[in-house]
Image (cartoon, rainbow, N blue to C red; front, side, top):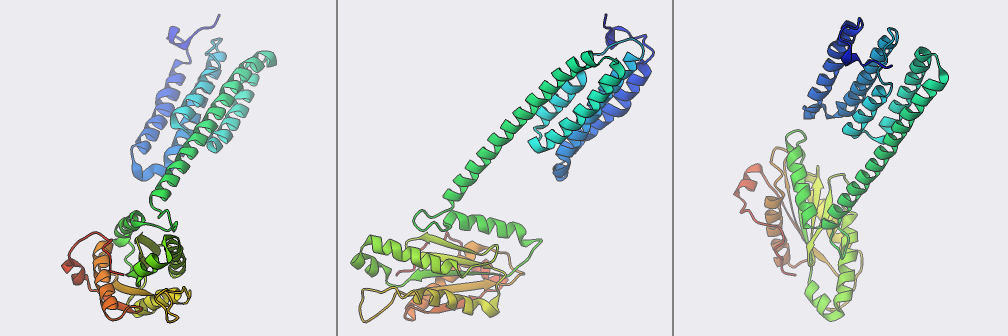
Length: 346
């Protein structure tokens, strides 16, 4: 008849069992808990749980071996139950739990067969443990699949929320997220930032005379041409609405601001889109651009206001041209705050 450890406090293996429980298992579990309470140690969360699960499982198996040597019998499934409970509570990824489960099954099988001395009895216990671990792996795989599906859906929803539906370009929300990113990186990665506001010249007349379908196609073609002018990781070309676009260049300074603005202007002009005003005229854009030094805080909202003012200068000067300004840190503080999106007037 099986004897439980808790029912035989006089058992001689109790001191060794207490050493395993309080001297090994408890400190390891406590350490894993402390690691989980520290966000800076997040990369160690899963490894800590795997190690803790192994320590508990093999600690239980060691106590079972000690009992078998004195004629007692702790249920053999305590060890796999510890592994299963640890894997589920930790929500381990499938490819982390699989090798851990295989290693545990191999070692546990060897220990059970060696100390039981009866392969049929050991095989029966091992089969139950194997089924439990397989069920855990299947559950973890399904859990991970659902988590990934949810993440993909979340990312798709975010992408669609930050995309202009007509041009499939980043929209105002994407520009705002970039502004947040640049602010968060400013302290550790100070970089020069340039921003251009670009408006299609006389677009209302183009749209009224050729129709909305032609106008939409024109905006898409202009957007594709401008998108080729921003190639760095944090560069962004965004359509704010109507015929207005914003280009943000990360790492571009005063010496290259005007050439970059000119490249945007000529890229659209080189499309050769016929304008219905006659005289062989082609569609053009006006560009207002500003840049800030690396020492200034990257406030895209203030930079937009400054670039929009430069756009008005380009419009008043006759359109199809660029107007640029190099801002100092003090200039940004003096700019009136406002939201991007004011119309520059065609």
